[in-house]
Length: 218
Image 1 (cartoon, helix red, strand yellow):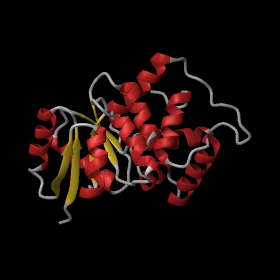
Image 2 (cartoon, rainbow, N blue to C red):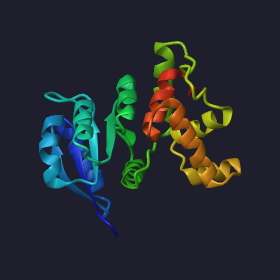
Image 3 (cartoon, rainbow, N blue to C red):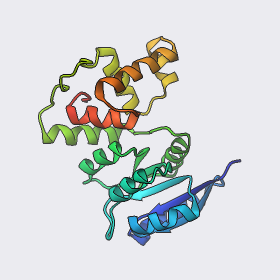
Image 4 (cartoon, rainbow, N blue to C red):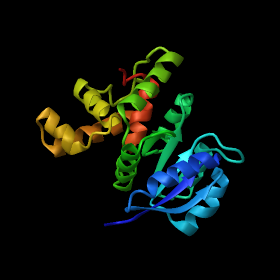
């Protein structure tokens, strides 16, 4: 069985200890390191080379978002799963735009934690239905749903919007293809069209921009 190295970044000791206790019940996980803030995480990440980082958002010295921005600037590909609470919906949207591979409430259960980590290791973005609902509601509360900005590429088609909705909920291309009764390569072609129309180059960026523009709704 493959073993994944996990770094935990949170300024609360009780959160770090709780996550460690859960992870240690799984033979496939190993605690590679822990940090109290984003700066400590950046100082440690190259040395421990984690497979996944569990990152808090609000921390002293350097926030989780700032640390993610620096990891992106350094071209560090380590996937990040954000640890969140019930009052950080706007920050979650920003984290999604920075490429977060998932979001976990700090009191998440064992199976959900394991599933999110394994998904991140595979390079997939996993967003649970409750997290997506919170993110969408946060955007809708801040502003009236806006139409996509006009561009030479045109707005998303109904099918493209549906595919992007599936992506936002964590579906893989193969699963979307099965749902729609089309070839997987056709789904990938739709995704390429979506990226071109939105001016992005990844699934997380496409979802983040679609949320900002009000394209994705409940």
